[in-house]
Amino acid sequence: MTTAVAVKEVTAGEFEQEVNQYKGKVLVDFYAPWCQPCKMIAPVVEQIAGEKPDLKVVKVDADNAQELMVKYGIRGIPTLLLIENGEVLNTQVGAASVLQVRTFVGE
Image 1 (tube, rainbow, N blue to C red):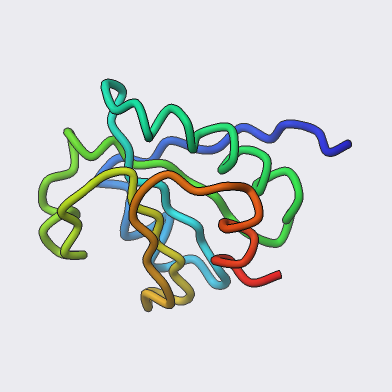
Image 2: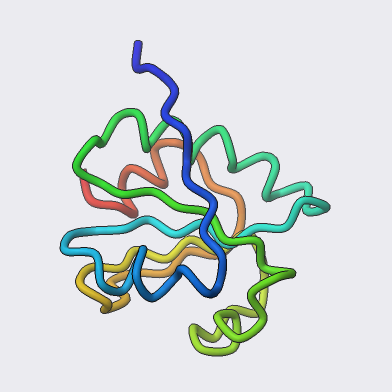
């Protein structure tokens, strides 16, 4: 059993330093507090964070990050982005199972 790891909440202002300047892979969960599918995927994202200590996992409140939504072409939430050294490697829209997210981040 993996221990729960707190997924860090990142603001639009912190995104460049926390995500784009990070050396390594970052899983970014764009969500909104009112979004039901976002609530469904939240424990999945937390589980992945616990399973993969080499993967940085952050969440961004989409309501407070419109410029990031536009920059990354995000039209629906939840959206997961896999970013490495500032480059988007993969995008997944909608709720997903643990298996799907494991595959998404690369087992």
